[in-house]
Image (cartoon, rainbow, N blue to C red; front, side, top):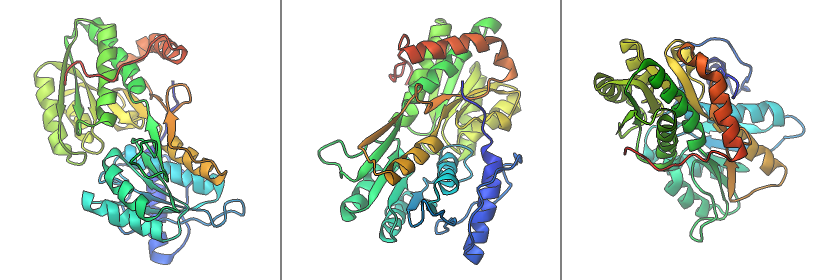
Amino acid sequence: MTGRIRPVGLLAVALAALAMGVAACGSSNSSSSSSSSSSAAAAPSSSSTSTAAASSSGSGFKVGLVTDIGGLNDHGFNHLSYEGLLQAESQLGIKGTVLQSTSGSDYVPNLSRLAASGNNLVIAVGFLMANAIQEVALKYPNVHFAIIDNPGGAAPDTAKNIEGIDFAEQQAGYPAGYLTGLYLKEHHYTTASSVGGQSIPPVTDYIGGYQAGVKAADPSAKLLNAYSQNFTDESSCKELALNQINAGSKVVFQVAGACGLGVISAGEQTHTQVIGVDADQSYLAPTLVLTSAEKKVNTGVFTAIKNLQNGQFSSNLQENINNGGVGIGKIGPAGAAYTAQINNIIAEMKSGKINPPTALLVK
């Protein structure tokens, strides 16, 4: 099982340094803090940048990162990408720049701006940026690009200067689902559910693995699933989660980025167990987050940067349970009794005995 991280504390310090950098052209600070306040710092605007002084080993190596519309304060996906960039600044001595997207129309301009400003690598955070990065990569064939959650330049019609950073989300969803099934069965509960942002592979792969895990542990369990059709509006995800809870769900898995924070709010309001996503979100509701299905986007970003610094660039960088790219976070108090069983499930996944599916049982 993977160790716990503290994304919000690092974000508070990183964004504070980011704001200073914008005001005074200073360098960012990647040291961490124990603060867990979700409003510790305001996110910078879509045109803000983050820079750090480069060490001699990485001097002149520049990396740009474009967030999806969830922004740096999403407590998960985008924030983890930024953590990976900060790690590369600290350990590899690169100079990083971050541009935040507030809508899909920002993708091409932000990617183009970074490609035109001398970055060695430009990283797009998210599946929804696939068309945008393809368009920009074709215009800048001498710049290397990478995209989270989408295949790179393997297909004949895809620019060969794009590297995909792909994750086996089903391998994180499955043990979270198995834990859910054990919890349901022990307490004679009947139903578990999930709230996704959109029906796209990085979301449905998580949910497919989760649903399979629930059923493996409790074949009689009923499954519910719904999509908010966005990754930013917490109120819409909260409403869906409350509807599922009213229909009998005792555990709700959120796979909706910043929107999914509304699921955790619904759990707090009704004292219902929830499953976090991407980052270890146990700090948001310590007694109610049963666990989190983790996707180590920070590790993927750092690895892609390190590899390119060393002259390595491939069409796809695969992150999975065996290389630590996915896993689960801290198991909460309600699931602590099942820790040994979950560790066994993860070991069987690593050995190949269990191969979680991506197909949905309930769409």
